[in-house]
Amino acid sequence: MDKKLQVFISSTFTDMQEERQAAVEAILKCGHIPAGMELFSADNKKQFEVIKTWIKNSDVFLLILGGRYGSIEASSNKSYIQLEYEYAKHIGKKPIAIVLSDKGIASKATEGIYDIYNLEANTPEYKKFKDNIIASKMCEFFDNKASLKSCIFSMLRNCEENINQYHGWIRGEKDINTYTYPYIIKSQEFIFRYINKNDILYTKKIKIKALVDGIQYFSDRYMWNSGGNITQSLSNPRQIIVDEFMEGAFKVYTIRLEDISFKGREYEIEVHFKITNSTFRNHQYLGVTISYPSEQLHLQVDTPSNLTLSHCKYNIYKHSVDRVPEATKKLTPNNNHIQKTFTILEIGKKYNLEWDIN
Image 1: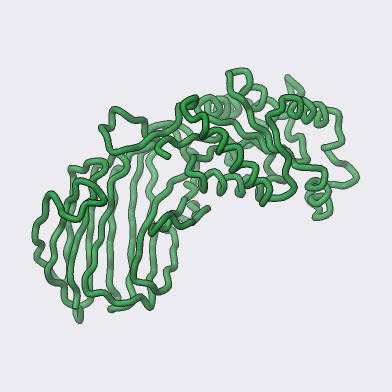
Image 2: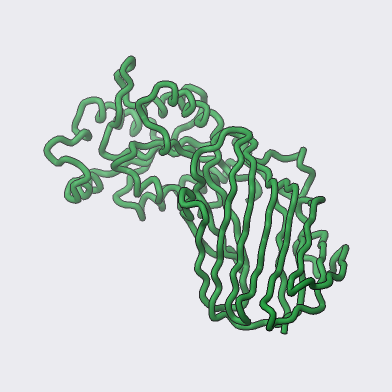
């Protein structure tokens, strides 16, 4: 699907951490963009104004109601999750709620997450809020993380059937001015370093600049056709890989960034792939198809002295599926090293290095 929906996730935090993560995974699996405020404290009125901006800029408002009513805003005497829900309705959103069932609440109480003798789910405020949600008929119930994901899959399918009602994010192969992008890629640096014939260190350094407020996740993908074992890691300990799945021949992974973006915020992402015991292939490629507005791409291959690079060149393809490049040029290895930097990059085109190694 070309259009991606931004889904704002509202919930209490301490009791719903695993459920929030499950929701993020489900939304990403459907190809959409999760948004949430878990890095913000719930009881700060100034920060609630930021939350309202997020809700306004999101396509879908999703409330996950557990067994807690949550922190109370003093002037209204309502919880922040109720205020978020009511604000979404006030600005014309159609909030969707997924409510933890009595069975699910009992299970969490057994695990010690809820105080069985002092359940917030039994308070008048919680019951009234829950009754209003049920009366809206825009809710489903879940028992555990698996059923929560199923509810989200169903909810997003319904949204996709009416996709034209939403603004969404769209990316494509046309001119940048035709589309809205959440960020631009300031630079990409891909370094493919042979340790020996079967072991490789592959590093991707990516710098992005947010074009809007509220971006917290970055998705990327790679394809590797030579088997072996791949260990993936991030240089920044505050960034976390939250989801991975196969999409055809590609492995897609999603990174939660260290904080929530504001317009103009730049992030540096450095991903390391340690490949061991792979099948040696004497003909290889390294490259990328440009999917977002990009300013610079650097491709580099390094080998030890006992391996020799030959028949090296770079290629530019008009489309990612093309077999014949629209431009190609030979490269001469220098001290077991080839590289090429591209500064004119067009969305939809593929840029790569190609080489033989013996």
